[in-house]
Image (tube, rainbow, N blue to C red; front, side, top):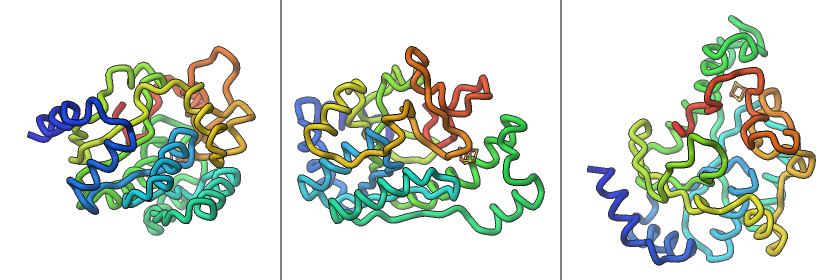
Length: 233
Ligand code: SF4
């Protein structure tokens, strides 16, 4: 049923600009529209569009406790510039304490299973809480980011989180994202200029070399399909 709603939304918004599509969602779903930001380039474009158009969209971020200082810097600049309220969700303290007490602070390097356990505690569980009760989840996913994302649609039903995702920048190239940032003086994570394209937790993200896949800097020691459970693609 919800996949049918996603398909209907694709049809209804097919000639809309991003701004029009976001405004339409707010009018249809009121305060059940949320945007998750990790302050990467794509998310910064969406945050700027929301602020510029004064759209009443709830914004949240997940503070895993292992982020780069540069990420906190752009977080701070963003709330100062746009006066956007950004709600922060933290992992459960007891779950993090148990993990560190049992396996130490760097267990994610030891196996994919351990890495997924850490991602579950620090990202997936807080995300589940943040999405609870909402109907539309706006994301900064782009098709170009990985092979897994090639077949994404603008609207998709996420069966895991039981919510409809809207991916407004789906067809944007990285150059288009950067162009919007430069033209609109959007704050961006200083690490992007140092070869970091996709930025997550500090111990699990590195810069990439020219020609490397965009997601190559995430969990680079693994040959898994490089997702943390937030997005299945
Ligand atoms: Fe843990 Fe790394 Fe996942 Fe962050 S990206 S939650 S540090 S495993």
